[in-house]
Length: 178
Length: 144
Image (cartoon, rainbow over all chains, first blue to last red; front, side, top):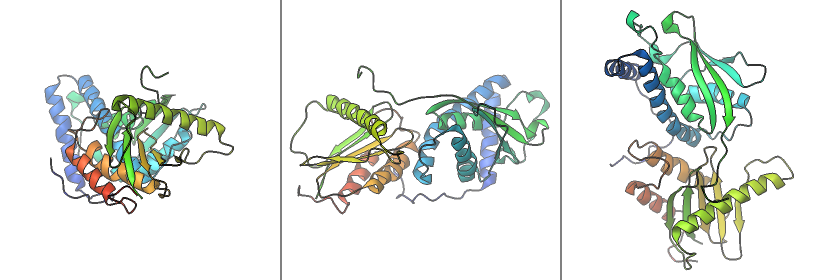
């Protein structure tokens, strides 16, 4: 596959309508392929995960952020740098658990759902579940859980994603090297 | 001044890529050599961070012997770029970062047909990397 010469690492602009419509077409097709909403949610999460494991490399290549020292720093980088870089929005971080291992990302507006209304027969569809998968994949160096707790498509005022830290995954020597 | 060879590892120790330009002495079977290199890097990294008298900033950067210098760059995702050069070469973190960001990320990570976690098959990556290294100011066609 040939590629044009490297255009440098600045972000390339694209129409947001094209992005929203492409995402919508993706979800619609998944709904046709899988019969129930639960399967679609799982597929979106899986696709998001595969995007996330690659996206993190692009993020590190472009943003010069180093290793985060704790989960709070991770939360800040996700909200202030990563979301800004990829979706052009800056969610706020709230509701830290007392142990410091859970927090919420509040998105005032979600670019994926512009023009979208959920029909009645898809009430358990988590339309933007791709985002949860992306977050899980990008944070592949630690096991995290990401899920939607509020969704503007379901009538809530804002969209809220709850992130929970499970554990850190350390680099391992390849098998048989101990 | 010259570049001897370059290794690229992922966080599981898989050798994603190896290229050499000037190398007079072989260590042994390539597969064994990659494991040896990775094991050594893993040990040095953890040694360096344990023994550091101050808070670590970048961690392990390079080591040198009387004949060559090994330069190291690692990303938070565990991708490791290792370049062996001769002694005249100073710090080249920006070069290694460029190899990661403009070559590995652009040509391998962003290509959905290139699977991750195994040796890179992309001929484009190999040739771009080769041209880039040959264009470096400290690379000379004859071992210096």
